[in-house]
Length: 353
Ligand SMILES: CCC(=O)SCCNC(=O)CCNC(=O)[C@H](O)C(C)(C)COP(=O)(O)OP(=O)(O)OC[C@H]1O[C@@H](n2cnc3c(N)ncnc32)[C@H](O)[C@@H]1OP(=O)(O)O
Ligand SMILES: O=CC(=O)O
Ligand SMILES: [Mg+2]
Image (cartoon, rainbow, N blue to C red; front, side, top):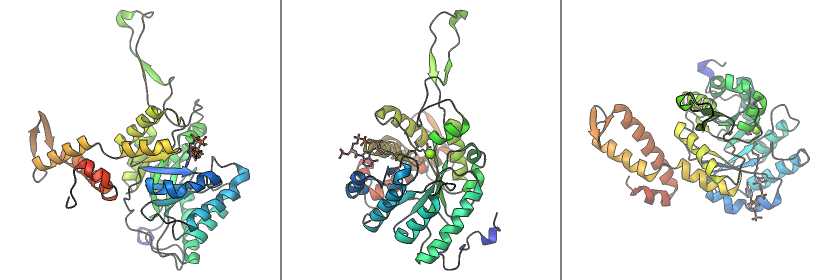
């Protein structure tokens, strides 16, 4: 662990100074595309303005035989990047793979000027972040960049979950964490075969009525990811960085995808991954506060005056703590509306709001 005095010093001569605060840019969906797929690369100009984050994925999902082509496709997209209101990220291969070093070098040296965030998979502890941190500083200095590239880690190993707080605090470059339920399930030796979401076998069953073990009993499916998401949210928030739900693999089951995204939103996540165009709209809907909640938040804030004390509104007690929740809702809505005039209209915000 670096001394607190050195925490905000650049890690290489000539590298840009680390940021003191991570920008709270809208990132409701991190849209994945495989840059080795020419058909999908051709869609980038149309998709980029419709998403908050576009991510060129170099890791899992790209066949081993296409790794170089994916890196070349990423560079091609970066060189033509002309959507400054959308963030541009990449996911590099894991640090123990034969590709990670070349991924990082190519990304920073060739397109570092347009790259906002590098997503690092399978992070096991702060030492992985320290390695990437120093390397990025050296590469930024070499490329003559004037602002630091941030780092986003995927929480997808048991060791990573056990050290999640240390990972979040490892560097001022840390932008956020995503839950990686597929790799995490494998690493934990969970007995599932899915990419995120629930499982019908993970349930609780109501007690037998009158002790009748033969009578039908209601069952309730439980959330496999609740513990990890809650831990991730606490670790992120206490370090001033942002938590995200990751992939939902059942592309056709848009309802369950929406439910999974909403659970994450309610627990504090700011966004999720979209793997297919159909998931972009789901993430946009879920991670933009509901206009009814925004209107309610405005009413509570107005009724609470200076924000202290206790009042009754519609039969419910409101006080200092509920007004703080309402401010979170309103601030989130305002930040999103600034970038999205349709949302501003939906919330009834005028330009002065
Ligand atoms: C599990 C842990 C992880 O690491 S998850 C992250 C790694 N996986 C990924 O990034 C997968 C990204 N998604 C994809 O590659 C595709 O969506 C997959 C899942 C293969 C499905 O593709 P496909 O069979 O073409 O679907 P489709 O016929 O329904 O597509 C309709 C049109 O949309 C396009 N499309 C599809 N996915 C994307 C995407 N991610 N970004 C941009 N465009 C996409 C398709 O090309 C297709 O276009 P068209 O209608 O033929 O012109
Ligand atoms: O990379 C994501 C995952 O779920 O694994
Ligand atoms: Mg993974």
